[in-house]
Image (tube, rainbow, N blue to C red):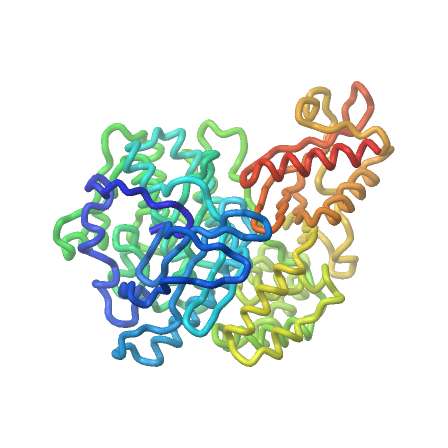
Length: 550
C-alpha cells in the first residue's frame, strides 16, 4: 500500500487487481526475494520520537507501517515509515536480517539523493535498537489505485498529463543510476492539486548497465517477463515494462494481464498476451505496445519514450527533465573518495577503480559529450557528484562524523544529518551548460542561464517589476543572494530557475523566469507555483517583492 497517503476504507473491488492478495509476488519466487512476510506483532504499540507527535496509521506493507505524525517544531504533517530491524521469527537467519538492514539503508541513501518535484522527499532518518524510522513529506491526496477504483479509466488527455509527470520522475531516477523496481499504481499518489508523487523506494536499487541485477522483486501484475523467467536484468528495462502496465491501467481502468490461475497469469505476462479495448486511440495503443514488448532489448528506451508521438500529442512542449548534474572534473577529490569507500563498500566493490576510470573518461572524451555522459549514469559517479556538490557549497563542513561512525546505520544517520543541515542553497546549471565547458576553464563559473527574454506581455500578470537593476547580471546576483538567505535550492535551466524552498517539514517547488519588458524598459521576475506548500511559495514571493523594491 502507499506509504504517504491515507488509505481508503472502501473495500478493494475486482476491476483493477482482482487477485492481488491471493497471488502476491513473493509467493512466486524462492527465499532470495526481497518481499518479506507480514508479522504485525513486531511493530511498536507506542513510539517515542523527540521531535514528532505520532497519530493514526495511514498505510502498511509487508515489511513496514506508516503513521501520520506532526513535527512539533514546525507543526507540519509528515509520513513516518517504521521498519523493524529484526524479525521475531527464530527461523529467520542472521544473514536475512543483515540483508534487510542493507535494503533499508539503501532506501535511505537513494531517497536522500533524490530532488524532483514528482518524487516524495526524505526529510529525516533516525533509528533505535528495534526500528528504523524514515520521515517523508506527507502527501495530501489519494493513490492512483484508489483514484481509478473510484473514478474508472481516465480520458487519454488526463492520462497523458499524469503519465508525463511519472516519466519525468523515472527519467530522473535512471539518469542517476537508480531503478525503482516497484512501479505500480499503489506507489503513485495524486496530490490534492492534481499532480503526482512517486513513493516507496524500499525495493529500489542502484543499477549499472555493466553489471546485471539478480533479485526478483516487485508486484506480479506489473512485473516484466524476464523477472518471471528468472533472467538477469539491468534495472531500467523492468521499470519501462511497469510503466507500460501503469499507462494501460490508467487508460483502460483494469490491468492488461489477468487470470484466476496464477500460472496462467504468469504465462500471459511471459508471452505478452493482452488485448486493447476498441475505445483506445491507435497512438496510445502503439505507445503502450512499445513498452509491453517481451524482449528487453526490443523494448523502447526511456529516451525514445519521451519523444513518443502520443506522449507529446496536444502538448506545447516536451516533458520537463530534471537531471542532477555531473560536473566536469580535472581530478578526483580524495576526501569524497575516502567517504564513498568508507560507507558504500557494502554496495560497490570497485569504487576507486570506477572513479579513476571516470576521470580518465572525462579527460579522454572532453570534446565528446555523448561518450562522457555514458559514465555519468554509473551509480558511484552519481554519488560522487552528489557529495562533491555538498562539499563545494559547504567547504567549512567535514565528513569526519560519517567516517568515524562505528556502524553502517550510524554512518547513514550522520550522512542524512550532514545533508539536512547543510542543504542551504545549491545553485546548479543545466546539464548542457556544464558539458559545453572546457576542462581547462573555470568549471564552476556562472553561465548565461537562465536566459532573460524580451517580452511585452509575459511576466506582467504574475511577475515583479525590478526598478533598481540596470543589467541582467545584477538582477541574477540579487536573486542568488536572496535565495541563499532563504535557504532555497536553485537549479538553472535555459529558460528559468527551478526552485525548492524548504522550511522544517514543509516544501514548495516553483519556477522563476526573467523577462525584459520592451515597453517600460525594465526587468520583470515572473513566478510559477508547481507543487507542494502553496502558502510557503506565496510567503517567498511576498518577501522577494518587498526586498527587490527596497
